Structure formats: C-alpha cells, structure tokens
Image: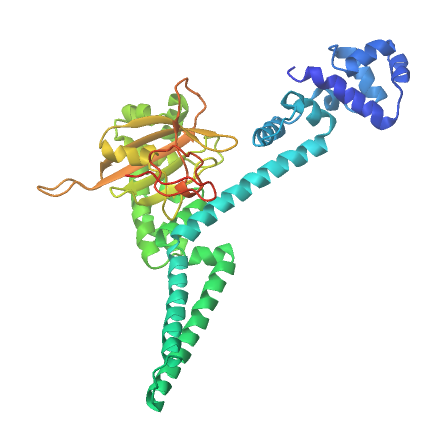
Length: 434
C-alpha cells in the first residue's frame, strides 16, 4: 500500500504513548530489538501476523497502524507549505501527519481558513470598488458635507449678511446636517448589516442567482415535459424586476430540459466526459444550451462541479454560477482574458482553453466558451451577441501551457499583464498605457 513505509512511524508513536520500551515490545512479538528499531524507522516493510501481533501489544486496531494519513489533509498541508516563502520539509509531511494527526489537521484547517479569508478580501474589495449601493451612500454623505461647508463658509466670510439671509443659511445648514445624519446612519447600517440584509439590497440579478444557488442551480420541478415555469417563479417569492428575470431563466430552463432530457443527458455526459462539443454533436443541438444544461446537472449525483457565466456584447456579466476555484467579480472589474470575453471577438466559434488562476496554489480549469446571437438577426440591425462559458476541473492537465487569467486587476499579482486596466493595491503595479 502507498503508505506502508509510514507504518513504522505509527508503531513507534503508539509505543511511546504507552511508555513501552522497544526491547519489551520486541520480545513480546518474538523479534529482535534491532529489527523493531528498523521497522520503527520505516526501513523494513511488515505485514500479516507481525503487524497483527504489534497491534495487539500496542492495544490498537490493525487499521490504525496500516491506514495512511488523510489525503485531503496532506494536500492541504503541502499547499499551505507552498504558500510560504520559507524552507519546510515537504518530503516529511506524510510522517508529520502520521505521527501527529491532530496538529496536521490543525494546519490543514488553518490553510482552509486562510483561503476563505482571502476570498472574503477579494469579494469585499470588489464591493468597495463597484457596489452601486455603497457608491450611492458615499455620494450622499459627501454631497451633504459639501453643502454644509459651502453654507458655513459664507456665514464666516468677511461680507456682512442681513438677518434674513443669515436665517436662510442657518436653515440650509440645519437641513443638510439632518440629511448628513440620515445618510451616515444608512451607510453604517448597510456596512454592518448581516449577509441576508445585504443580499436583500442587492441587484435583481444577484437575487435570482441567490435563489438558484439555494437549490443548487437545479430546478427539479422543470425537468418534466409538462412543467409550468410560472409555479417556480411564484414559489421563489421574489419581487419586482427579479421576478421577471427569474421568469426568463425558468422559461429557458424548461426549454433546455425539453431539448435535452435529464436522464439521457446525464448518461451522455458520463460517456463523453462532459465535453460540450461532443454532447452538442450527439444530440444535434447548438453548443450554448448544452453548456447551460451542464450547469443545471443535479448536485449530489457524482457530477463534477461546473461553473457558468454569461455576458452581453458590452462584456457586462448577466449570470454567474460560481464553483470552487472559479469566481468572477460580481460588481465589475473581471479579467478580460477569460475565454468568456474572448469569444465575443469570434462569434459562433467554439473556444476550448486551459486556464490557470494566480495564487499560492494555482487553480487550473478547463473552459468552453461561445458567443451567439441572443435574438434572430434583423435586416440592417446590429447583431445582439451573448457569450456563454462553462468551467470544469482540468483533470486531464494537458501538456500545453495554460492561459494565465486573473480575478480583478486590483488584486492580481501579474505585474507584466498587458491587459491590466488599473493598478493593483499595495504592489506598486501600474495600469498599461492603451
């Protein structure tokens, strides 16, 4: 077994925990102390009766000696080590995990926590830069402060004002101060609001995506041929513009489900390796509904995580289904190198690209993208394009060099990127001159 060479480390750890001497244990299992010493230093492979005898002496189950450390824990430990600019013993990570499972679990847990915090920083950075609610609140505060300052400067100026004008300016200052207090309170409430309150104040697009996220982006009620999208919209309980957007999504979902029935589509996905080009050819349908259908596969059915993003011809994101390792900023500033945006320059041409995201543990993904007409073309009218991209885990790891894409210029470490549009924070990187 792959972790057999670490059995000795676990035997030694258990023996020391029990306070047993090496010679006493060796005598009990009828081997020499020197041979047991070689075993404990992973210089001899053991199995069968001997390991069973040692497990009995050490009062543990055989599986506790033979089973290796959790692979996920090892991967996370190695990833954490790779993210630090210090010399660590990568080759001894398995031994550390075997001898000290508690500490190794803590290291892995902290690495996951750091990743989550970095993701929160990225999201908050985008919100600070592009959130219209926050921008509007700040504008109200600055506007009120400027008005108060303007009125006050007149009152303290050298020119004498009669009582009537003084009273007017005092009234203006009072009204503006009330407005400042209200706008400041609204800003504080927004910044301190729980996630649910912020989500409630989000755009209609975000409200729809939040609802779809709650059901795993899979609308089971629309999988039958006689499904009624209106029932899904009513049950979602959204309001205003979000209701209209969800209705459009539900209608398109029902249409895609009829075009590509779930059972047959799932079977074909497993056969073709979730290749949208192969699936489009098999079902003789366009590639775009296939990509949408891939993102609608039911969660918990052993399908790989599949992300989806769509944008209009201006590059504005109109839909996002994030998955681990893939996230595009909600409020703008997305990296223009993503195939989603590149497809707009090549309408009706399928694109397949391996991409890699920056970071201590670079994430490698496989992207398929295609830009098509959103509505049928009309005589002498501009072509209305919409680009669609799906993102899958890059399990094949092709030999070619993947396309290096970023998340947002503000936090992207690629200093030499020719597509940079603004400086990165705290790095001294500057935007490219166009």
